[in-house]
Image (tube, rainbow, N blue to C red):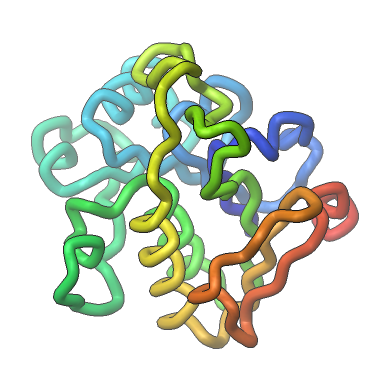
Length: 196
């Protein structure tokens, strides 16, 4: 199963050529169909439903929006596998990317591949393939601080030790220290086609 983030490292990857079941985040439905779409921001889930993304995919969102929208093929994001005391441990502070990784871990039992989870910006500006489009910030916007994403995805790696997570990234990408576990590896993004 492949979980697709929206970092710019995936810009030159043709997701449609990858045969695995796919979990995507937010506006990915604009470019290619996925089996599961995670949209925790109210504007994004409304956009996805209005565009008919839920005709092809199960769409997952927060309970607040789920109960307000009650649309076909709409589901709630999974519960967190732990209870923490820090702000990033509160479900409301989890973004679509970490929830997509959690959903993948709940669905698969063995291997989960991640692409587009860049975390860092190369130039201090927004790193997102959908920047400058509806419901996204401008390319001139400051990069998002990845600390919450690092913490939250790290918790998924921690609480699903029997799943092998492979992160596909560009050369010189630095894996966060808290992600360094026996069940987490990094591979070059160009190998994504060979392993699917």
